[in-house]
Length: 269
Image 1 (cartoon, rainbow, N blue to C red):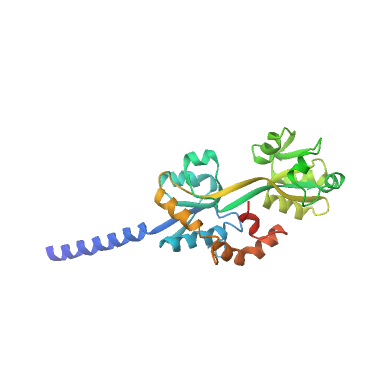
Image 2 (image 1 turned 120 degrees about the vertical axis):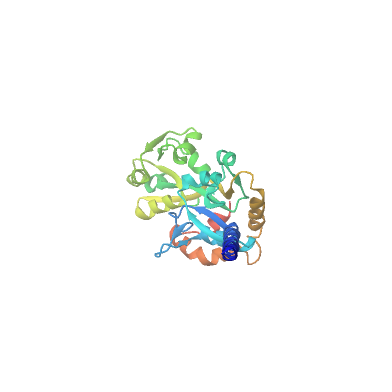
């Protein structure tokens, strides 16, 4: 009986050690899978998107199996701090406030704030898709609209412009389309969606007011993983590197979304 118990104990210990070693090798990557084409799911509810591809490539680079953890965006940093996830690859902007709460890698993408403009206002002020933010800011008595507590209000306000605050994106877009407001500043997706819904009454100016750096994030003090992330990011521009791989896979989809640019829109500042 003692011999059987001893054998059972040895087998159980081996199984547990193997399980722990397997768990230790899993890289738990947090992202919010509601934002295609960067973070999304397939019809079978499997993770897919540009950030998913980056996560899987990073796992291969450091020799760890990747597990995507679908995490509400506002919970990503708390989950890093608690150890629920190891790293965030989640289109997260690097800000001073976030750098206090987490460690960030080098920048690998830029998310830009561009302008949805009323077409009649643009024509009256000789604005085109290739106009600059200096051209826009030089126009007096511009009626800006934005979403309360978001950059769409904060940016024009920082230039001393008056801004009407809307309750949501749909209301702000409609105001620009109807001509009760002149300009809405937001990231590319809502601006392009607003234009696509109102192509006869709006236009886009692509020059960016802000180009937000995007990085990977870890719990404070995880220098080993951050150093690995930075070494990985440093290979993106290599011949046949990840930028090339991602562009080949995603350019047509991004071009379909933006209507003018592929992945280069996010790669270049």
